Image 1 (cartoon, one colour):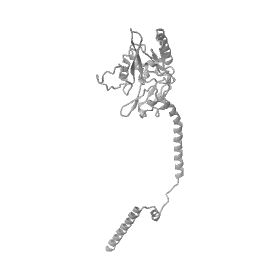
Image 2 (cartoon, one colour):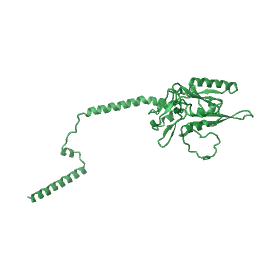
Image 3 (cartoon, helix red, strand yellow):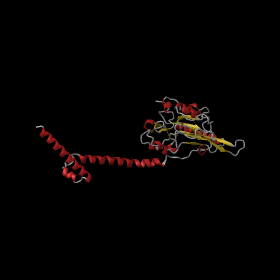
Image 4 (cartoon, one colour):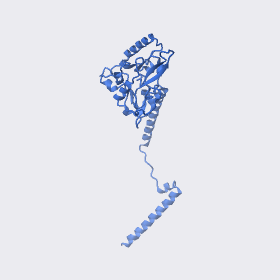
Length: 307
């Protein structure tokens, strides 16, 4: 068993060290063989260096760009770089509502995906407070970050962590990542960044993608104290009712089966059946009898002629 799969792990993204080079985005697409349908200069400049605009079926990781105005002439604008991908929540709404088990927890905290089990119900998309799960392809299968599970199993770091040149990404035991993140926050606050904070320690039961936010979580578009969508609670309430309904249906079928044992349809005469015939059926029946009598008479005549 790999050292990265036999204990609770986490990734730490330090936005204060990030240069937004997007090397992690490229590494993610390369390692996971994710296609891209954007041609060279296919779209005009949108006014932002963020590209693509959001997660989609072929992008599991997007580096976000947010400009922050300052009051100093020397540095009138500061970048607030961020990271959008699955946070691998300890209390993941997507796992709670998935009806097929396509989404599940791993011992190291990763929320894994079994694409072959996905039925494209989109429940996970609605239950995720971070709006992360996306669907792609003609069969509409779920797509999201897997923390490069195939690499972890072989003792390798996630592709994005491995490729990060400025050292903005770290991966290791979750408690160590929390301690490292808090230490970095203290350093930033000592340098005058009073809104610096560590995001993800408690949200949704504790995230396994932690972020050091230089200008505060809001500057990176993150909501503090977020919990799974209300859809999760409704789903949990509906599950017992659905179970009872299924049990009642099975019980009803069983009663019907027992009651039908030994049942035989009562034989009825033609005259009894005629009581329920329509006028059209009566006319059709009379015609059939007339034709049959005619056939019998012709047969009798032929038999007598042959003697």
